[in-house]
Amino acid sequence: MNAKEFLGKDVIEDRGWRVGKVRDVIIDPNTWEVKAFEVALEKEVAEEYGIKKMFGAATVPVRVEDVKSVGDAIMLKGSKLTLSTMPELGPMDGGKAKGTMSTTEKDNETF
Image (cartoon, rainbow, N blue to C red):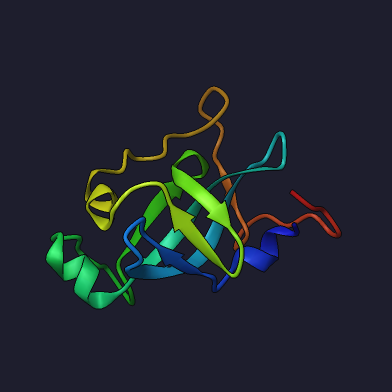
């Protein structure tokens, strides 16, 4: 699957509630592997869990390990409650910055 195909997909938690949409894909620039999705939360979900927004929609990183399946939508392994406890994504590979679809692209690459 091409990384761009993830953009705009609905993100659904394990009980069927839509929590948001994929806004960006976080990529390891050394291996070109997708590591996480930046999810723009539904306003109600962000407010319910006290996740603040700076500009636009509040976003959270969702690690690939927390994804159950990918199809027409991205299904999470847990409930929307897990969004408020997601660990921060640190720099990868010894402090090198991570790439995103917004800042890093590789033509015709599939992941």
